Image (cartoon, rainbow, N blue to C red; front, side, top):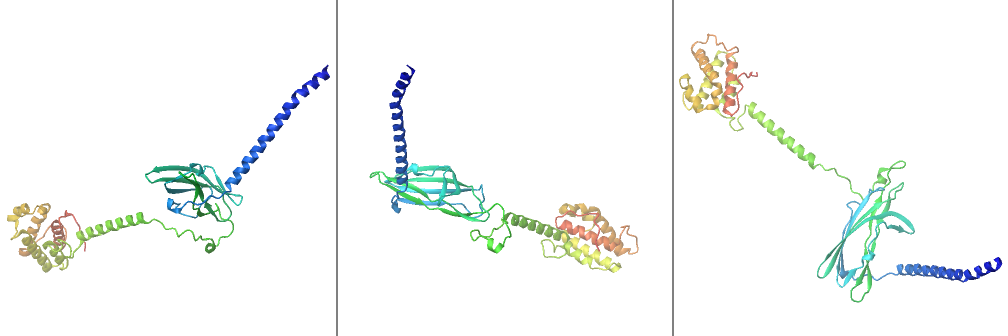
Length: 347
């Protein structure tokens, strides 16, 4: 009885096993045929589209050398496709696709694609923003390229399919480090022009510094200058100061210095100036108000110089030096500057 049951079980499943094997063989044959047909279709070279239907604009990376592993290259391709042709969007590059050259992986991978489409009356503009990344390196600099993209176009009426080839972009990949001795003349790449430093900021700072220094020197010259080639440097007190500096430090020099200051005061006041009309002068010329005590002291000194030359002046310094200092204070007021009442006169 057991033998009969086993024989019955085997006879029951044998046709099913044969049917499953036939189906498996059929599916394998179908897959092989599909792959073969796709390979044959991929090898078919489509005709190129007439150039008048497509216009191309490329925005390639700004440099074509010096890239190392991990660097990113951005490329923008703008296609203006005129009707009756339209882009077969299935032919656009695929993210993650790694190009092969002569069976070898190139090491340049498309990591991002952004497709912008603008429809107009007679054409459609396609903007492809492509981002590639370098995943290869070597001991020496080597050439590389962003592959030429083959895009397919379809005629909307006849359904004819043609292709358009976007040109490749060549560049060079550099090693992360240099191996062995480097001969600079031989290693310099003709693809990269000499690098220039941006000196605009430095030039601006240098110009501002020179301008500030010039203004400072001009102001210092205006304050300390004794020549008459700047505004107000030829005024009465400026001339008197220059003259007094050249006078000798003796009785005659002191009298000449006092006379020279009287002349400058009279010219500035527009008449003869003494203690009697000093208040009126300071009211008309308020710039000299800070020197009121000095003016009163000058008139007292003038009386001693001309009428009592042997009298003691109580100035603390030589009368000639005091007159020189006083003339400089008047010159500062004349130029619109604040005089230094306790200023020490340089010899």
